[in-house]
Length: 628
Figure 1 (cartoon, one colour):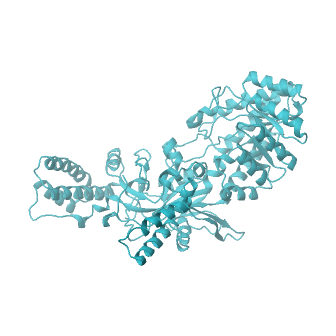
Figure 2: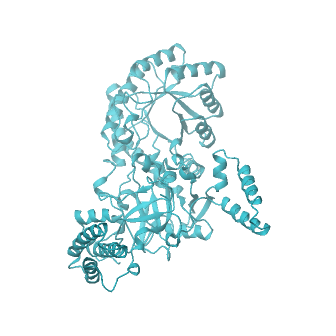
């Protein structure tokens, strides 16, 4: 139904809030606002032509590179504005996204900047040593054993600018022992400090005295004594803190910077002459909200950089110490927007309530006949009144069915007619939103079955209640009128993104048996891939990277197909050869099958085993099984 009111897809789906000027809506399609502006549905259909079905994870490396450059540009602007003499450097924390389709182009596209990688495990450290451009920073966080510290020494011997951040006194003792064993060159040393300032939001426990990581004031003094007694105080180059991922308010960061700045000044005066850097960790928030009343952060990137630079300059001036090099580890900000999950809708469950399903009798119960008359005569003038009447009639008729006064056909007609009246009334009243209409939409929401696993591709939604922007890829020149809840294809009742009247999602009423309808889940590039679980043994979706050349032309590369069923079983330690052997044996022992039939069935089964587990087509009206 073409829009007759102020429907604006750009604003109705909140692209102006979360889109970061990366997307534009033209000709009813959402497009990447870069180069030749390919539409997401165009990219998806090209992948379909290549034979890839099911959900797609589409990467746009240029968006991550853009975010890094934007961060550097804002810090450089703030430094010039406040006359700041310290440097700015940054690292990407690999825990946010370790996949080569993301990390490799990120390092290639930022080699001219003081930008490197942060590692929190031995495997991540090996990646950092391999992928970080020589001369660019590497930081190592998290708990460490002798072997991990030794790897850090080897990185230094390769020529890397690496800093090992100490989480406990025992780690410092290990570094001293490795220095005796391996000698110079050795990594720089950082001290992670446990601030009094706590974080806020879902990750508040990352900061404050009860946080998992960092040295207390007492331990900090002990570390200084140990460094001096070991004649290694000159290796102390950085202090580090982190008050939480996705900081939605700026005030805790400002308090933390004041606290850390004063600790920096104190350590300098205690003889740490080579201490020159403060690492403020990550936490730069990403805007996920699609609605003005549910904004995720209360500050801009300009305010963030201004506050960091101004406060550190103010402290350095007051304490008469050099202005420190500023380090950040903003991972979510860099990675989130670079990836879009695209998944096809398989079914609209309420489409069984269509006019052709009615079984109107020659003589109907009075209330059923009234419902039928309401449906035939509803218009904009009477839509609200008829909607109320239909809901009242439905309650009465369902009670009559429970008491045995109407039959199953009458009940089916009731359900269908009420649904048709509600659907029509919402179309007529959609331009006049009210709390009542939203409440009704919540009661009669359309269930869209979407070909993806929420647990695999959006684990933070399931585990933390983190919302992600969702919208259709096309038909954006037509106003959506269906209040939508999204069901994934797992056999788990938690695999649902429910309709929320405070955070509503409206989609189109389409017949997916006749035309494809794709949904895009945006800002899924941070954490979701690596945290994704194999619930119901669904694997990662097929992945593709979209690259642009200098003339703005785009092409698809680095296609990584979703794992086959056999590959998934092999990954969770099943002997897939034994599985194939047992299947073959069972068929061979089945005397009810002829040899040719047995070979044909086995061939078909092996074909299925070599494909991924996502659904290709589904039609519940033709007897397919539903998962509970």
